[in-house]
Length: 371
Image (cartoon, rainbow, N blue to C red; front, side, top):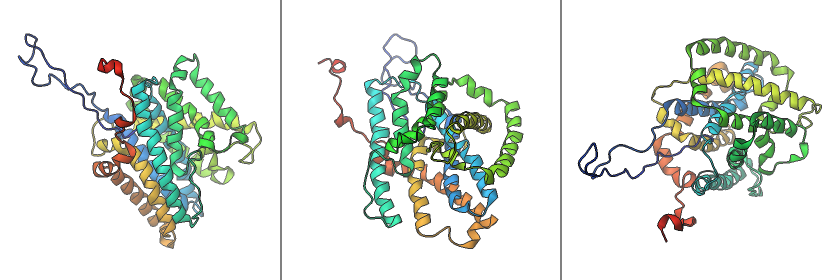
């Protein structure tokens, strides 16, 4: 949202004129011009989106289980930050040019409208609230990420002009925790509080990702995760994990104002440490799930219907589901469902909603046509 589930673009290959090196005629392409996908980032996107599904599946299991709540807290501390950092990294080239804006409209704005309407009707059915209104200004359920991605990408050129973009983004996020009056329009609390992770992604370079993938970082990450899990288990009854959602101010969470900026900086540091540990274990080679990394937006938006449906039909009701074996089963099922939703057949079915071809809706550049 995610990084996008973009299709590989195909370009018309250049012709090779006679007399040049290579083929004598230009009837065949000399070389592919499309840049190959990086397996590491596709792997990272897939693993992060699977953790998103698992986290949502654990939500109904938290009551009465300190262990599940601790795992839930640990996962929520880094899975969306990791996804947003990678989204920022792939937004570095956004320059607000005509082609970029077209792409933003077709792959972010249109899916936002489609799924906002779809989730509203689906929620009317699952919640028994037939009067629930459709509001494009109040993102429903998972659509908040599309609204956030739209705003973040539009501001990308601004961050490129600032001398200290990350400190500025952190100040904005900290100030948001002091402002309960921001309201729910476009879920701006989340947009602003998650902003530093996106800006960090804009600042990262390939060598930064190579740095966290070194063997020594991979080894250090194991005790870090162990300590983090133990810390999550200890802190579970002592604080409100709603801080990890980044959608409320300090006042709304019942804390004094100064607590917000402190938590902003503390969570940013902890989340980045865990994101680095997570990325350290992401495979850099092609694996069986690498191709699924291109469909993470599909899995992200579609799995919400499965989660809400599971709650509506009472699938979390039986007692055995809340036993250790049941919790493991729920985890595996959530991972399997997310995996299936990222596959090419599912992407082909839902591509008109998530990656529509809307050339008819945009004016053609006359200068390009030579008119």
